[in-house]
Length: 226
Image (cartoon, rainbow, N blue to C red):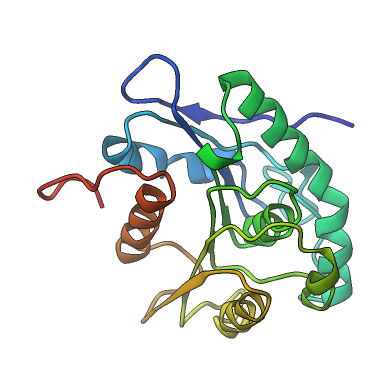
């Protein structure tokens, strides 16, 4: 199996990282698309190292980007098969990156955007040891009917979505939240008014607070950060 890799950032404080954030990009993008969040978040959490691996496959719809799996008009069967096929790439990346820094799941958060959210939820809920948390922007829960028999851990989850999303309707995040709560996963949700398929400052602020809480880091004083 080909190993995935991509850009990284930090830790801002230098030295050995104390925490790890892995950012999973959306369909047709690459790691550079999400690593741009790291310089905004790093001042709030200077011991965190951020990694944004490229998905394993060239994108069918954008030859300059990558995909975790092919898409087909949100076909549930395609999404379910896709996350299962790509999950080993993410699991291996997590295992190897945590080992590289001497960290474990309690010091690691998965963050996804769009198709990356599908991957983060699928992988994070099926690992034996719970991650510190999962954040998903503008995504959905693939294979929801299988979660009851496949869930192995219940890290806290934050899901964010714009109510003007033209790619993935925000109702998908509302449904994902319902399913996760039904299965005992502590889940918070934020629907951003007027936001399309993207991440806004308010959503980034919610994510920052979630990360600080997940990592048990103090909230910075003043107006620093998002």
